[in-house]
Amino acid sequence: MQSTIQLINLLGAGALLLWGLRLIKTGVLRAFGASLRQWIAKGTGNRFAAALSGLAATLALQSSTATAVITASFASREIIDPKMAQAVMLGANVGTALAAIVLSLDVHWFSSLMILIGVIGFNSSRYTRGKGIGRAILGLGLMLLALQMVNGVTEPLRQSQVVITVLGALGDAPVFALMLAAGLAFTASSSLAVVLFVALLTQAGIVAPALAVILVAGANLGGAVPPALAVIAEGTQARRLTFSNLLVRGIGAITLTILAPPVAELVAGVMPRPVNLAIAIHLGFNLALLIVFLPLLTPIARLSALLLPMPEQPEKGANYLDESVLDTPQMALAGAARETLRVSDIVLKMLQASLDGLRRATPDAKSNMATLDDDVDALQHAIKLYLTKLDTTGLDSDDARRSSEIVSYAINLEHVGDIIEGGLAEVAAKRAKRQVRFSETRPTGNPRSLRKDNCQYAAVTVSFSNPRCPVGATTCGRQGRNSTT
Figure 1 (spheres, one colour):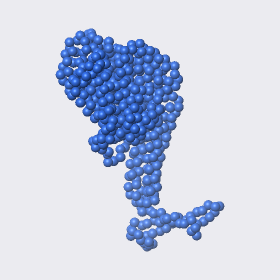
Figure 2: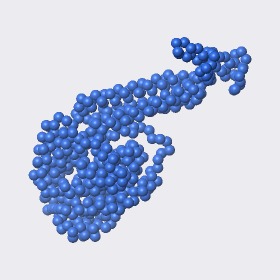
Figure 3: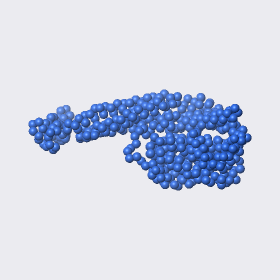
Figure 4: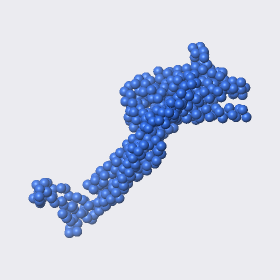
C-alpha cells in the first residue's frame, strides 16, 4: 500500500509540475502575447540575434514547445525566414536548459512566496495583463512546489531494491533507456520536466552518471516530437522547421548516447555534486547543438526542403487560425481577423472572375467560382468554430464585441459569395452557353451620343449571335444576326 501511495504522490507532483508550466505559458502569452510575437519577428535579423530571441522567449514561457509552435506559425506565414526560424529553435533549446538551472535551485521558501504573490496579483488586477503576470508567477510557484514534492517522494526510492535493479538494467541497455526517456518527454510534452526528474534521481544516487547522460539525451529527443505533431496542419514551412529541429536533436541524442561513459566521467570530474550532473549535461548538450549547427543553417534548410518538398497544388485551409494561442484571446482574435480578410480576398477573386466571365465567354467560369465559393464556406465555418473555442473567461467586453464583429463579417462575406455564385456566375454561364456578345463601346465623340444636363449617354449595341451561323460571319440571313440598342 505504501508503494501505491508513493506512486500516486509522484504522479500528482508530475501533474502539478506540468500545470505550473501551462500557467506560466498562458500567463506570459496573455500578458505580452502580441508584443512577444512582434519581438520574436523583429529580433531575427541575423542568426545570432535569432538564437538570442529564442532563448529569451523560452525563458519567459518556460517551454521550448510553446516557442517552437509560435516560431513555426511565423515560418508558415513567411514572417520569419526559415533559416532564422531554425536559429530561434536552437536558442530555445538553450533557454530550456537555463530554465532548468533556475528551477533546480534549493529555495524552498521561494515557491510559497511566488504562490502568494501570484494569487494576490491575479485576484487584485482588473486588467488582462495584470492577471496574466499573476498567473505566470503562480505557475512558477507551483512548479517549485512540485519539485519539492518530487524530491520528497523519491527520497525512499534509494532503499528500494526493485528500483535500483530496474535502473541498473537500463544502464546496460542504452537504446531502451534513450527510448524510455524520449517517451516520457513526449508524454509530458516537456523535456524540462523529465530533465528535472532525472536530476533528482541522480541526486538520490538511484541513477548512475552514464545513465543520466542517456536519459537527458532521450529527454531532449522526445521534447522535439510534440512541436512536430502540433504543426502538421500549419503548412510545409512549419513542418520543415519542426522536422529540422527533430533531426538536429536526434543527431545530438544519438551522438551523446554513444559517448555517454566518457562524457559522464568528464562532467562528474568538473561537477562532483550529483544534483548538478543532469542539469550540466542538459545545458552542455544544447550549447553544443547551438555551436555546431548555427553555422549550418543553410545546409539544414536545403535538406529539409529536399525531404519535405512543397506540394504542387497550393495548400487550402485556414492559415491564421492558430490553435496554440486560444488561451490568449487578443492573439486569437488577431488571427481570426486576418483569416477573415483572407476570405474577403477570395470573394474579390470571385467578383473579378465573374466580371471576366461577362466580358468574354469562359466555359469553366462557373465551376471556378463554385470552387472558390466552397473555399469561402469552409473558411467561414472554420472561423466560427475557432472563435467558439476561445476561453470566454478571459474575454473582456471589447474582445467579446470584436469576436462578434469578426463572426458577423465572415458570415456577410459568405453571403456575398453565395450571391456571386448564384447570380453573376449564372449570368456568365448563360452568356457563354448562348453565345451572347457585347459590342465594343463607341467613342465619346460619336454622333449617336446624346448629351443632356451634362450627362452623356452612349449607345451600346449588343449582338445576339445565332449558334447556326458560321464563326466570324458578319451576316447570316434574316434570323442570323440581330442587333439591339
